[in-house]
Amino acid sequence: MVQYNLESNITNEPNLICAFTERLDTANCLEIEDELINKVRESKAPVIFNLQDVDYVASAFLRMCLKVAKEVGPENFSVINVHPNVKKVFKIAGFDKQISIT
Amino acid sequence: MGNTIDANKIMEKATSAAAIFGQLSQEHTDRIVRAAYEAAFDNRVKLAKLAYEETGKGKWEDKVIKNAVATQFVYDDIKDLKTVGIISEDEENGIVEIAQPIGPIFALIPVTNPTSTVMFKILIALKTRNPIIIGPHPNAIKCSTEAARICYEAALKEDAPEDCVQWLSEVSMDITHELMGHKDLSLVLATGGAGLVHAAYSSGTPAIGVGPGNVPVFVEKSADARFAVEQIIISKTFDNGTVCASEQAIVAERAIADKVVEEFKQQKCYFLSREEGKALEKVAYDPKRELMNAEIVGKPAPVIAKMAGIDVPDDTKLLLVRLDEVGKECPLSGEILAPILAFYKVGGFDDAINQCIDLNFYGGTGHTVSMYSNDEDKIKKFASVMNAGRILLNTPSSQGAVGGIYNTLNPSFTLGCGSGGKNITTDNITAKHLLNIQRIARRRVNRRLEHFDQNLYFDESLDANAIEKKFDMND
Image 1 (tube, each protein chain N blue to C red):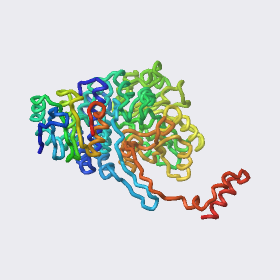
Image 2: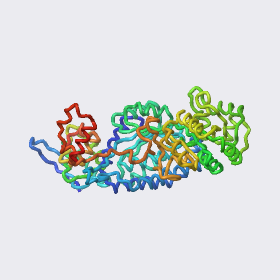
Image 3: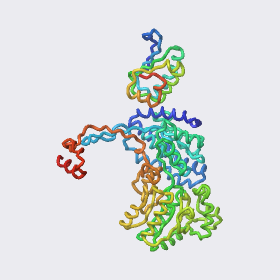
């Protein structure tokens, strides 16, 4: 359901890239939350959430984003490839003021 | 959640809930509403008893009915309403309407309906995908927050957004004002006293506020006196008169007044002497606040009589006081949410209407008026001179104004009072008032304007009539 890849970007800095491949409803988020947060803690690398295949997020996902931002600092956390539906969620919630959403 | 009184935290949660809510489909939304409705309805008796125990106002049995109306009747009214996405398409005029949520709502709850109003407001908020924050009355915190909790937990079971329902477990003027004026709040849905409603309107946030009424009942000479009195008693004794749309004053034409008085007496209502009226005034009215005394709100007639030192039979249903005047010097002519009625005997039809106008404009502008009559012309004349959102005919006004029981008005526990009550609408507030409607406007060129020489607008010798003629010629 959720793929994690520790990759290097063009600046050769390691990133933890999490590519989500499903609807992020409450049940799915609860299933992955602990594992994902542990991974973030362990890697200590900047985190990128790739939402290319996600068209719905639940409250639990927003909470997970807040936890990640707290762990690595908002400047080291970004969300990419967001669908318009999901972009609107981040906008209304005001997350785009703290986290890079593209 | 319930323990926080940090307005910013509450609003952060509400804003996140609003963001998630916006993604939900109609089907998902309706499942959430259904779940909240069922849970609320199933707890109607428990919550009614809790409300009565905590506030000491009204009757728990009548609060059960209020809870049933606020859940079952309201649900039935809104369940098929389209509130998500495209709600109408008019191909001919090129207009497509799209429903969007308005955003976080702060709902202020009155002590007189502390559980029914909570459940009503939550249902219409959920139906429109708006998060809601319940602000209970300080004397009804336990029952109001319990009603909110029950709805919220049921909604969560259907995967509703977290924090889509929040509540204040402590209430203060500071937190109320802070929330009302918060930059992220979209609407204050205020039901309560005049001061609270005024504060809501002054907050800078859009508000729908419903304040006091002062409902005159015109018993016109064609009315059936027995029926009228029976209906008025049903209404004014309901929850011991706590409904803001309950009758406040009877205005009877001379031709029928004696019959009306006799009927009240026969149906266990007590007419006070002048001296008893003065004694009642002292306990029913607080001259410092220039308002009804909160101590007598929702108390039974014999209890109030005892407080005033008046001896009445134990089964007395209503206390009636004969009055001639309306205004501050005559405090019982204003709103008293208790089983107390003013009684005016007047000459003819015009006298009665004038008396009703005085009462209507004395603290009840825009709210509700009532009439018992079988004369259609007189009904229309009466209605045309009243300033009221609801003109109820041959109907108990408490139950009639709420809608869905004795008429087809939308069932609601927030009754719009129009500009007279400083409201934006005279409607019974329901889900449709909690939506932003977006309109796609397709190109549809005005054919008359297309063939009209617009340079003619610059010819000052052409007046409106001449321009209209040229406009139509090209049609």
